[in-house]
Image 1 (tube, rainbow, N blue to C red):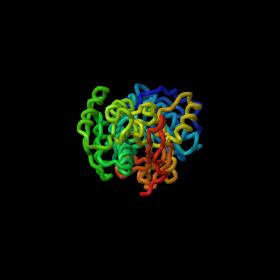
Image 2 (cartoon, rainbow, N blue to C red; image 1 turned 45 degrees about the vertical axis):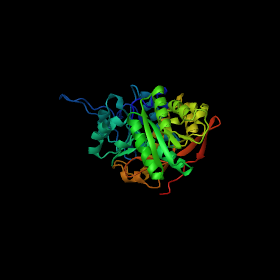
Image 3 (cartoon, rainbow, N blue to C red; image 1 turned 90 degrees about the vertical axis):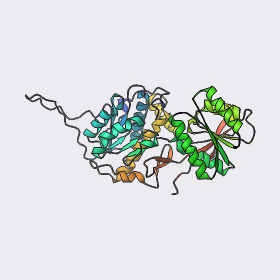
Image 4 (cartoon, rainbow, N blue to C red; image 1 turned 180 degrees about the vertical axis):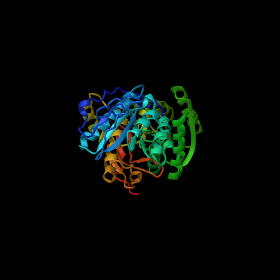
Length: 389
């Protein structure tokens, strides 16, 4: 996952007054609550005893609390606090560890302090370092990354993966007349993932791939890519796998007046982007994203408590806590986290709708399909409330 993907807004620091008694977010990594030991004459490190939890589960939150992504990590930490407050939970002790100073060191402290589950890290690049400390201790990870490549038997990816948005949109387009699909994707990791997901989704839906064009991110480059694709022809549906700003540039080439039978598709990157509603060329375009129905209420509550708007990704922290509380019903304090419970085929329900983890450890989300229409975005195919299989 791009390290700068979430760096968009500033979020205020977590206030100590928001902490629940007996259900704590402990910043900085588990400060002991017992009195310090009496010094001895012999030299050597002084070791302080850790709190003993006999009726609470110890869960570590590993996110950057400083540096370039510190505001994002703080937003996620705030959301975990909200989840505890909203549920009146008294059986979790959540301790926050700052990964900005080194993800492996943060994970080592988390494991040494008796945490049996790690929520995080935020960045996929930090997963190997965290796993090196967590796996020998049998501590699983629920990472906020959206990179499916880091998933494994003890690594669960809860972030929204672009592959699922593409699959949902292509499938909807196929059922509504799309037959020959083309795509315009950026160079780099995101574009490679988008192209692979696009090919798989078209094949799975019974359509045909008419062509894929790539470009370096920039207006001139995507315009050239769209021009080449238009000259090739032979397609009725085009996926533009990038932000709304660049999608508008491509769509202006493919259907400049916003008319004609050509259908434009987008990805989850369009979610919340107002620009798509002002571009005639994107009129009638489809894209898929997680439902926003509960986010507005969450966002208002968050602002009331912390004085700023949350990052959109912070709902992952909230939902991860709900998930831990659900599994805590069958999880004895002090014992290893029951990983098998994460693979409940019936799934779970959170702020972002229904979700479940597949055998690969990658989250599967119930997404809705949206259409750009008359200066607004409307839902044309709601997200399913549950999983049927």
